[in-house]
Image (tube, rainbow, N blue to C red; front, top):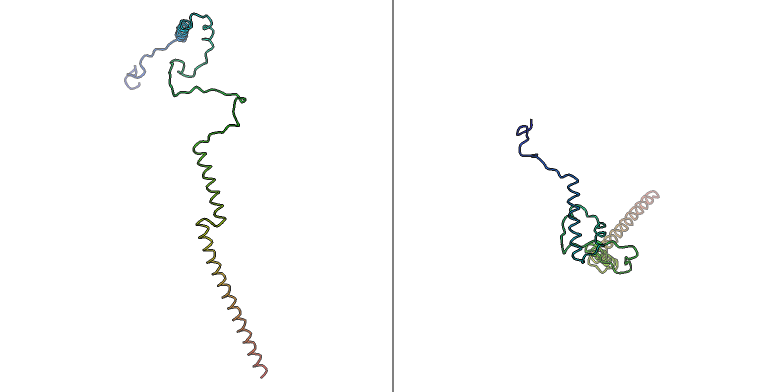
Length: 165
């Protein structure tokens, strides 16, 4: 047995359902009332009766109320022939920022390759220091090799002198 006894308490109270016939009758009455108002505004033309039947179908509760929202813009569909592809297109903020970022990066890379940016100047100075160190190391290595060759040659001469005596 559910909580609250057999009847189920306050939840699920007796519900009243509207039959489809009643709903159709209400809609028909609303349409009739709208037609009569249009007839009074137009001066009693009979053509308004046909136009009311062909109204655009509304989604959800859109058709139940007439809301006049000044911010609401009715979406209009354009045909391909009506589109203006040649005219200037407005970019969104993000797209503009992305394009500006790419252009700035390209400008920086051009300056960097030309050696005009601060980072490029620092890199070139450091490269010059490293080249000098390499040259000094190569020179020292060459001197050490020559000294080693000289000592080995002089050692061989001494040995040959001892052999001849």
